[in-house]
Length: 384
Image 1 (tube, one colour):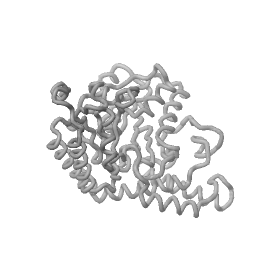
Image 2 (spheres, rainbow, N blue to C red):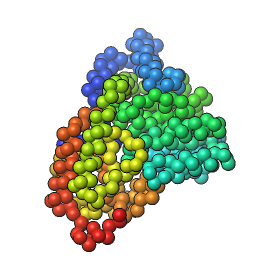
Image 3 (cartoon, rainbow, N blue to C red):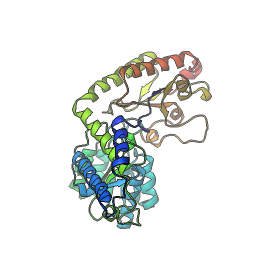
Image 4 (cartoon, one colour):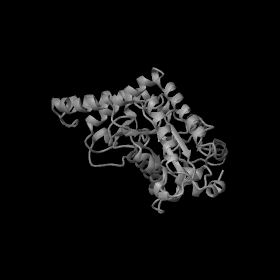
């Protein structure tokens, strides 16, 4: 099976696997225990914190270990609720964990930052609104999980700094695919190991001083997140991140971006009806989100046929159930609801080869030739 769903979760890389297994042997104790084995585990966590802080560009004292991005998102907005925050502005393109957490903890105090059709948050809107009023926080992701479009988080940070407003950045899709340098300037930064080759169930959150913890019940992490730390998972996260930063420094992303663009060109040549989402904006080198041609039978939709051909891809909304709502990101970009069940996301990883991309293209051609074609009348009536 050729795997093109890395934005959902990436397979654990060799470096992370080795670090995890080694940590099980070397650091079996609770880091809070007073004996030497506990102290060794605590020292390993301190070193891991320094590594992450170095990549982000912040203090190690600002790094909190979490179970992943969803916990981190809830921790951010719980902190704001406990601090008595007023209104918060959240990009309409955010991952559901950010949107749901904001609404869970702050309710009607959440306001959406609109998006442009190109796939990015509307900074003109943000700049204009910041001149009129001051929210407690703006939340803007670094890179979109559905279409890979890079968000203008640096420009948003500059705007927020000029108006004395905090910025939270979901960097789950950015970390491990692009250099993390500079992200630590944001007030909150969150990420998850399994998005870049670490194990599931472990992540990080960069927080400011005076942070109100979501989880209580123990003194761990200076009282900012209770619970025994996942030492093997954290060390595996650091090992995976180190490997990705090494690959980025070596320029390995440029070749992979070329493979992605070759795939898009071949896809468009094979199926001229295909539209690539956010094609006019900078995007992650690993991601292609495309509106595929309409199919006559949802039970034979693209994702199912490609799976039968040994190709694992993702779709934002399944047309088979009739129950799932269209992607909120798609709708925020002005997409039509009736097109949502034709959205496919192809997301590669560092181990994806040029041959894998070519096999994906050939699989799409084969699926189309085997019957994933709309009748002539339906094609003529399809939105353009």
